Structure formats: C-alpha cells, structure tokens
Length: 358
Image 1: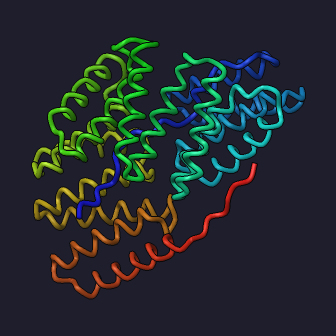
Image 2: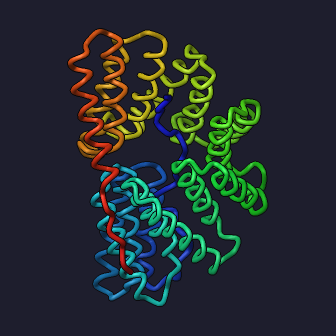
C-alpha cells in the first residue's frame, strides 16, 4: 500500500481579519508583526507581538491582548512548536469568548483546528473550522479569510479520506476567491493545488495536471521561487508522477521540493521530514536502497523530535524502513521496527480523547 505523506497545503498563521483599533500602538505593532510573519522572519514577528501584548495588557485592552496571543500561537505553529502554539491559542480563545469583539476569533479557531487535526482529533478540528467559518461569514460575507477556512476544511476531509466533501470545500473556496478577487488571484494557488490532489487520488490525471499548471502560473510572477506554496504545488505534481509510476520524474521533483523546504524551514522541520519520506519512497521504488535508507532515517529523526516518539508519522516511517530492511535481507532489524510501529498504531487506536469544553 502506498503510504506517501500528504502534500496538501494547510493555511495557518496570523493573517487576520481587520479589527477595531482600541489601542493604536498595539494595533501598529501587530501589523508590523504580521508583515514580518509574511516574510517568515519569525523572531522579528515574535518581538512585535510580545510588545503589543505588553501594551494591551497594561491598557486593559483584552481584544488586542488576545490577538497578540493568537498571533504568537500562529508563529509557533508555523515553526512546528505545537505545544506552545496550542497553549497560546487556547488562552486567546478563552479571552475572546468573554469579550464583545469576536472578529479575531476565526483566526484562533482556524489554528486550533490545525492543532486538533495534528493530534488526530478530527471531530474537534471540524467543530473549530465550522465555527470559524460561521463567525467570519457573520462579520463579512466577502472577507477573504473565508477562503482560508474553506481550504482547511477541505484538507481535513481529505485527511480523513472523505474526498467528496474535500472536493466540495475546495471548489467553494475557488469560487469564492474568483468572485471576490478574480481568476488571477494568487490566493487561488493552494486551493487549486489541493483540488488537484483530490483528482490524483481518483486518478483523474488530466484534471489534476490542469489544476497544477494553473497554480504554477499564478505563483510564477507573484512569489519567490522558494515560497512554500511553490514547494506545495511541486510536491503534489511529484505525487502524481509517483502514482503513475514515473519514478524518475517524481524523484526529480521531490528533490526540488526537499531543497526548497530545507532552505525555507531549516533541517528540523516536519515539512522537511515529509519530503524526505516521499523521496525515500520514490528511491525505494526505483531500487535505490542506500540513499532511501538515509532519507528515512532523516525523516524519522525529525519526526521523533518534532512530533514525538509515539506519533503516527513515526509509525509510518518505521513501517517503510522495515520494508526496505526486508528487501536488503535484514529481517531482525525489520522485525523490531515493525513491532514498534504496531505498538504505536495500537496505542493511537485505543486513546480516548477528552472533549474540549468551552
């Protein structure tokens, strides 16, 4: 069974809806933090957000204090520091639920949905997203943030193998952006890419290729060649070639993705692990076992550090490494890896998740 890591593009972070200005200094600092975030200068963004948080706290401005907390949570989410992200986002959520202004609420809910999905709590993730969508629509039916939430709802359905609802969500997002911003809006790129990913699963190759081509054209003149969106589109193109068993072309593309993600995210980010895993699968299919083993080991090391030793990504990597070890006549090592992977899967399948009360 093909267990390639999902290449669908999640949209997270601190791109928020407009908020009423209660403290101009806090508002200005938050804006500067968001600009730094867009440039992926996370340390600068964090400094601005912490300054905004201090000013808002001193002035008793709960809404901007919650925004600063939420923006910090988005930064830590983008950096792969999930526990700290969750703590900050939940704190922001608690404050926002008790304040009159709910305009920033969709952002926090969106990021919490990503964290819940990462923990395997898909029901909670869906609840967060549906509330985020409903809240955003109540404030402004044309707010561009709605497309971001629709995208992530589609990603959730894709993750849970509900490709029918995933397709509907992505198409709604595409229609929304085309209506509000036009057919040339760069915001269409992740939605088009993700819809193409659905079509890859269904082996609708021509439809998938057309969507990937359109996404690449939109990005070509809008973002840098090493932008995460570019890597995301290429990752899905590589997936298509892998699924069609064109391993030479898949390898070429996955190498590009791996190089981009190493440059953008650094060597210890889960996005780098995902690409290393996909490239290792491709090399294994081509009989290139030595390099494949090195890449599996790279992915495993990153996943154990960022996701934890009992994470599903760790189990998937162990399973594929075990398969490679059997191919190279190392049955004892393979058996140990399989036993560990099965233990993780058993544990994950028997966890009773607590309901989050609001």
